[in-house]
Image (cartoon, rainbow, N blue to C red; front, top):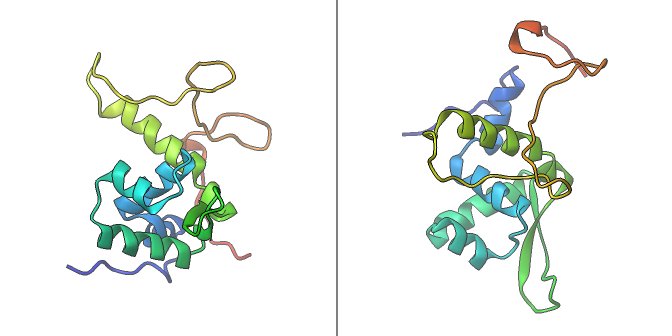
Length: 147
């Protein structure tokens, strides 16, 4: 079944999903945020077939989320690095992780958790207005805008 394209949709969420919404793509970005850069390491982490991984990485490069760079160890290999556009997905990945922690695990069930390195404590991603006040969906208004 073919997915509908949202490239021309007025909704930024729809356009974002058109680019990064496929689950393997988000898991590749998650791993890249965690420091993985080599094709073989992505494959080992994800357990993904080489052809599928190759297709997803090519799309992430084509969309400007990742780029191929010389290997950090000076070898002839190429690695995949997040671009600024890709690094800006960090709060999206953290928000998805926090939602999953809150709603998809039973009490006492083992899970991976991300902690603030400086404090060793959990943290929350929240939406704030210009005054620093926490916003909820009830506080938002949807309007049509242009750049």
